[in-house]
Image (cartoon, rainbow, N blue to C red):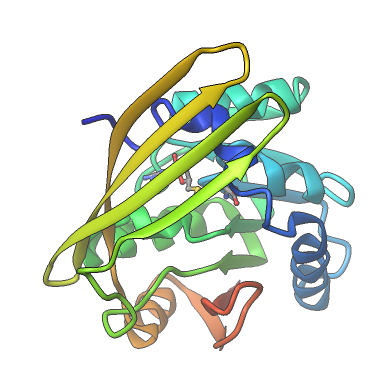
Length: 236
Ligand SMILES: C[S@@+](CC[C@H](N)C(=O)[O-])C[C@H]1O[C@@H](n2cnc3c(N)ncnc32)[C@H](O)[C@@H]1O
């Protein structure tokens, strides 16, 4: 089995073509501006292929961080002049501070323990200027995930079609997802592989406790861009 996004990075943008990065980024920009007027720099952790990073560069000097080299190579192709760092959001040290740190589209799902979530919030706090803003779009909470369900999606692109079947095994508040990908190109080539994605489920209260402990005043919007909620926290 492959690591997360090891091979699917190349089809990620096509597969998630339904996500309205442009409009969601306007919301993110407003949330930052309301709390830190004139903010200039933003770090996206778990930036993936840099779809949010690219949109946020309309207003800010942007930097990206991701744990998957495969995703960063797509990001670097998209934004050749932007700094992208290979690193783990749980523990990183870029030696600089930003006016905002954002972690969007549930990249935080890949943090699988409360200890690591605490470390992630502390790492983000260390990279923020005083009064800086941390925005985390969470994944599901412990009550929101059902196993025993296989989801499917097929997307047609320009010269290729991508299909994915998802299944999962849950152990407590940890979910191991298996994504079975199949890709076919019009020139006759085809590929199929499985990636395993280990993820964690946390409650709103757990986020709030850890954000407060890391030195943030945090608010929670239960809806957020995708109905998954949004934590918006200001560093004291
Ligand atoms: C669902 S994608 C979201 C990417 C991007 N934010 C977007 O909106 O398209 C999740 C991303 O989180 C990254 N990721 C997972 N665990 C990570 C970690 N511990 N540190 C940094 N990035 C991580 C993955 O490599 C992947 O690029």
